[in-house]
Length: 311
Image 1 (tube, one colour):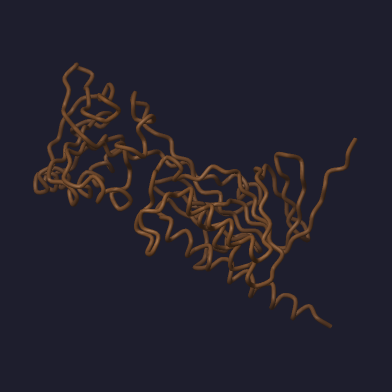
Image 2 (tube, rainbow, N blue to C red; image 1 turned 45 degrees about the vertical axis):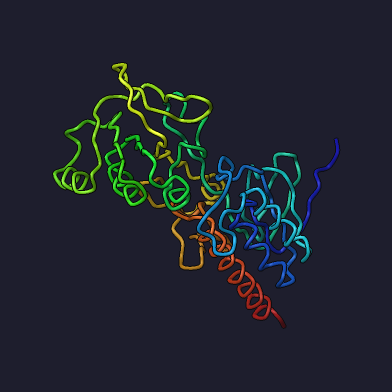
């Protein structure tokens, strides 16, 4: 039997998105031996472009990540295409990869993000990131003034419908799995004030013609012409590694996320979370900033630790 390879690092970053690469960039520039474990499953992969990142507005997410990988390589940061499947804590952290390799590090950054589960309506998954969208700040400008639909899956979808009305005055809220009586008087008042039309009944499928969304068909067979549909995916935080380490989680309306301080430090000493691994609403620019903050904090933590341990 071949012995598994064991490698030593100062910091292992699990996750090769904006947060993980940003943390690795800071650590590499601080001359820390750093490894990024990248499973290659970025949350924004369905999107053709990302927006709201100063100087990078409109850049394809794949290009953004490719540049980030090139930048960290300049500073000696290593990157492995693999998935971290287990982690344990002793004097150091031991990370086991799906490919069988075992790595050790003094500190960890968990930047594993989250996974979007889309509503099970025919056509939604196929068109997600194109004319089925979830974030008006990410894509609202590009589809401004078109005929919007909003697919309600919880009463919180009312908030989404109100928000997207900033980008179009032709908005229809399809209640789908939400009963009319679940809407509060404030909901109804605000929807009316925003000019949002409310349509009860389950949505059966999307209507697509010539590879573009043209409408929404209800279960009763009627169809409403729409050009864009906003949905609210169910966010599934990728917290498996944090749970294995015993990190404290807190419940939010969008799932359970780790309890962290202002730098991303979790309840487990030596473990930081960054990006969507620490919260639902972290956009690319926020994730990059969080990774930077975590990386700088870790470098200072290691430095002081070593100085205090010096004879």
